[in-house]
Amino acid sequence: MSVRALWIISHEKGEHVSIRFTRRFATVEHRAKSLAGSSYVAVPEDHSVLQLLLTELGLSDSDKYYVALRDDCLHRQRSPALELCVDGPGKGILWPVLAISRGPLTLACLPIVDAPAEPRPPLASLLSVSQGLTLLAGLQTFLLGSGGKPDNEGLASRLAMLPSLLLQVCPLGTPLDVPVSGAPAASAVPTPAGSQKQPFWKTGLHRGRAVVNVALKETVRSMQYGNRSRQDLWDVYGTVTCKCEVEGVLPNVTVTLTLPPNGSPLQDILVHPCVTSLDSCILTASSVDNCDGSAFSGPYKFPFSPPLEPFRLCSYTSQVPVPPILGSYQLREEENQLYVSVTLKLHESVKNSFEYCEAHMPFFNRDQIGVVEVKVSSGQMDVSKEKNLLVWGLGQKFPKSREVSMEGKISFSGPTPGPTDPICTELTAYIKLYFKVPDMTLSGCCVDQHSVQVYSSAKSRIMTSRELQSKEYFIWNSSGSAPVSSGQMML
Image 1 (cartoon, rainbow, N blue to C red):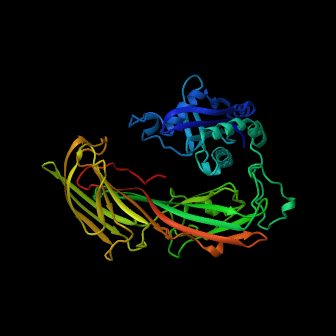
Image 2 (image 1 turned 135 degrees about the vertical axis):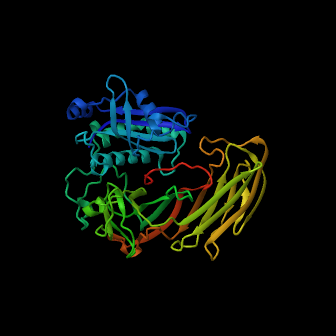
Image 3 (image 1 turned 90 degrees about the vertical axis):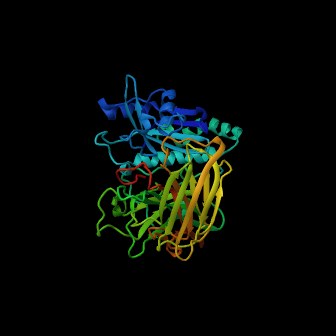
């Protein structure tokens, strides 16, 4: 794998955006031109790349709610592999432009793809994408460390060291010590450390007690309408994050994910490049295809040689039959007052023990909230200091009935108008749920502490955890209009 170009962009909440570092590799560009032939698209000037990247990442035109190049329904963003539409004499599409962001920096690169442009190959089949992301992640760790936001002087000094660093780890645009296509899988039997060469991306060795920490987090999203004419939508995706402090140049660790007997098979599985071997049936399960009873349902084994820093071992999606919390929201207006009725029901399969659970009810295009006369069956109701949001704190448990409700009316008479929103006009309104449930997942997926294997001379301490959290969990007013998707929620 080789990189045609590399960019490091600095931004602070969209203000004072600039390219702090850029590097192009002429020999790699010559190879890309030879491979692409008549479909070759040249890399534009840095200022053009900067503008295209900012638009694609949503960091420009913050005053515009709709940007055709980014928000058109026909455009499907595939983060972190982006498409940049280049205008001018060499117009065309640059793909895949890989971009990752953390803190004040966005790192991007354009790897060379040794495959025909049409039909476009799936990302999972492109080794250059995984290796390009690994390169960016390594540079990100070098620049930002573990804190995520170093001081300006520290960042400037590390940026000044990048040219000499790239000469060592990425000479002529080709990263060193990364897996090559078709290389045999590494043996699961550990080899003596003395015969192993330390790769450039591993900056040191761990000394001390061996500790392996595996954290499984599932995230659920939902759009509920409470209306037969609109289909409720939800999806679940999970990530497994590891931190391995194990002695040796290239230690071997195996993590196994298991499902309950009636669990839905994991789908759309993506793995970190450090995974040394994998059963092909693990990667072929896709949420786009119709799932049948023959789908592989585990156990899912991931042998790998871990880097020193925390990393995402794998991610997946899962099709669950129902969302964890079913909601009903009804809102009607009479004489400058809103009458509210809300019901939330916790599904019986969900553990009734929350780290937190809140329902936020914002109001747009109105005056500030004046008088609130509502009754809740459980929890506590608060008004934000901006007087445009009701916060219903549900605590750490639902009642035994697993159902809570809220009834009442709200009047608006504040001295200044509240925030505006182009979608939430008149009775178009929503409730957004925020919750986290420790020690459970919707799919039932778990990491057994005893199934984690560490091939090391010293005994390792194994720690595992799992949790479920919400993200973009909306319940829309069933009495008003609402944005509706015609298909499955996309990751």
